[in-house]
Image (cartoon, rainbow, N blue to C red; front, side, top):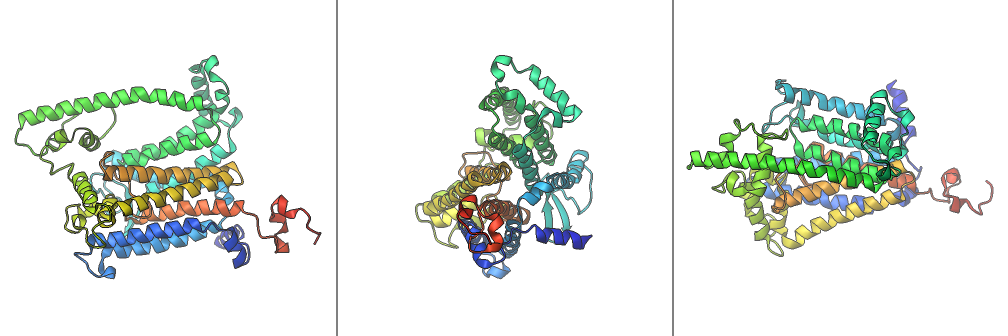
Amino acid sequence: MLKKAFQKLISSLNWEGNISAFIQRTDWWLPLLLALLSSWGVAAIYSTGSLKEPILWEQGFARQQIIFVALGWAVYWVVSLIDYKVFERYARWLYIGGIVLLLPIAICALGHFDLGTIIELRGGARRWITLGGPFNIQSSEIAKFTTLIMLSLIAGRGLVVGQLSKLELAAARVIRVFIPNKLAGTLPRYIPLIIRVAWMSFLPFALIFVQPDLASSLIYIPMAFALLFVANVPLRFFAFIGALLLPLAALLTVDMVRYGEALVAYQEAHPDSKNPAAGIRETFKDGILPMRNYQRERIMAFLRPELIDPSGSGATWQVRQAQIAIGQGSFSGEGFRQGMQARLGYLPEGAAHNDFLFSSIAEESGFIGGCSIIGLFALVIGITFRIAIKARDRFGSCLAVGVAVIVALHVVINIGMNIGAMPVTGVPLPFLSYGGSFVLSCFLLFGLVQSVHRSSQPLPAHNPDNADLLAPSQLAGRAPV
């Protein structure tokens, strides 16, 4: 059975049979840019801890990142050689597998079960499945890949009412009641597609949210909207959703006002407290939205830092030190291994090589380095969108657009929190931040993008065996073989 599965996998490889054709059909700009980013990430991780560990191979995080990147490149090229239509064939099973990996963590988080070293509580959250030693799986990263494939399948093919289950059909009828005929236009025929995408993206969103991991769960929402946009859902749908977000924003405002009032009351009762948020963390129960109090702390630290951290040494410490690091970098930077904020421990060890690595890079390479990082990501995202436009079908376009949206969100959120423009969240920087599951998932996603590109390219005309795969324009005028 395993032999047959392996043979089927080999037969699905999008391999041209010779190196010349392989080179011609590969978009080499993409791996070049990814190589620059991942190499820069290893160097930056090494530099943040080089004061303690001056030899590269003895620097634990840098050594492990090299291993993660090497495994990531292997995954990238293997996935790029597989025709992406194979993933379409197994999309449902992949999606189910991703959900199965999320379920035990969510059950432990909701029921506060203790599975020992298998699913550990770290920093108040359960997000990793421990396999032993340094090997951990962050199931939310795998679910990101499997959910993207499933949503791309749905958005690529579209749905009609006859393909809905009874429960989905009932939901479609309820939604149709609330859409006025004058405003509906062509929107009703897209309701089956919207419903299927909605609940299939909501399921991993909910399972990750309860870990709790708000930042990672929020990635699924814009990804789903982007795929619906590619599926030609009318713009009035997005306008309608935007209108629905206004009451949600109002609820969030009321929630944060109540939390702020609780902080003020605690400060008045305990004027010597340096961390009022810790004082009400277990007692504040007046929130409207289903958020953890530590999540409220992060939002309030962004909106009203003087309430959450009056001494400036607690919740806002990381952001302050990140901004200082970026400021010290000035235009050209302090130089490699010369940035002191991370190396001297002002940026905590748990964040300097991960969520706040961008500030360390900006300190050492300055404005030039920071803009270069942003420019590299802009090129990567631009190339990915170009591949989406040229894809041979809508499924391929959805895959590439989904990857571009995921990367863009990570970049905007991570750099935004480093410069103090967004609340602090646990969203790492693709290919740069330390982390095995995250690095592998990034290479896995861009392996899909490369597969979409390679599959959309015609085979070289000089090989007669490839005549059935040539573009129509290349076949014109060819003599029969």
